[in-house]
Image (cartoon, rainbow, N blue to C red; front, side, top):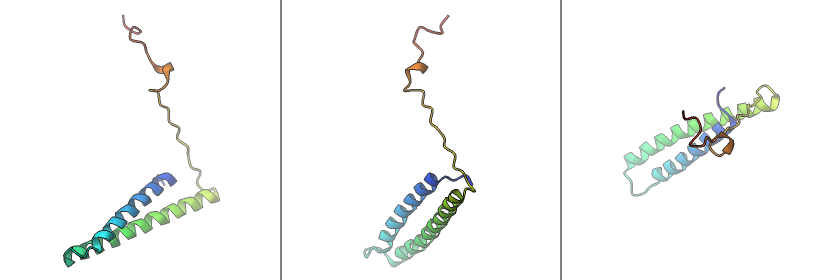
Length: 94
């Protein structure tokens, strides 16, 4: 499983935003019925995708809690803010 808890939570939040706005479109009274039907169909797909992501997150959390999965911590090594990595303009030239 390549997904992390953070990745899945991020995708779920994005999916909920998509669902919210698709529901708004589906409920528009000024839109044609065919458009609202298309939005309803898309909302069903988005809901299924959301449910799949939520199930995957639940399984991952259960695996972590049971010790079957140990999340890795990936540290950030940012060189651009550390003066030790800076080369002065005159160094390194022949």
